[in-house]
Length: 269
Ligand code: DGL
Image (tube, rainbow, N blue to C red; front, side, top):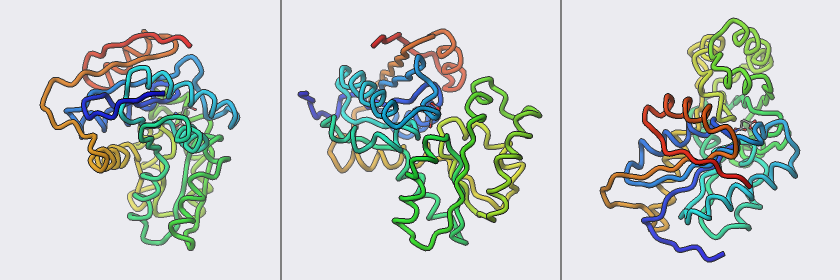
């Protein structure tokens, strides 16, 4: 597939749905000169309970959607996709691809004092072992406690960030994390930063929560700079949001979350 490598092309970001807006927001803030095309696969969300094969297939299709818009780099905001599909994506496209696992791991290892690190994520991400492998590769002595939290995504989608039921569910999921006495917890899912206050209230101030969105934006900046792809020209950046289903729900929530009107289109496969 011919891809023009030019700094004026947009950055592509994809997620299984809305959650990747946490990453989009951090990128928009750090790189205000960059145009962005965001694709949320709202027709097939959630990915976190799906098989490896499905997650890889969906991820490659999402990358193709972004390439139709001539993106110069692809950010895989979805942790489940980053866990399973990164090697396939890198083979499939000829633009730089950045996932969320590496940046989250680097931040966690920079922050932990005890070397005891927790990971909360979707069942797919935990099962892939992506965070566990990266952590151990970079620090073989690291002690890791990983916990799948399948009920968190629907609770966040409902906007129930700190309801009683959410607190009870979080208390249950975090028990093994607390027993493991971690001092750093990786929020290994796009949706979990929205539960930060609830998780903090359970874990207390001594556990550092790693929200990879900010780290991904910083790493993207470095990557674009190294590849000569940063857009330095000051202009009113254009942002396009694409979804595979239900634009109304996405428009309402995305506008609220990003604090701006968005240009949104439906993209069918
Ligand atoms: N975006 C997914 C992730 O970060 C969470 C939502 C889903 O399960 O699709 O793993």
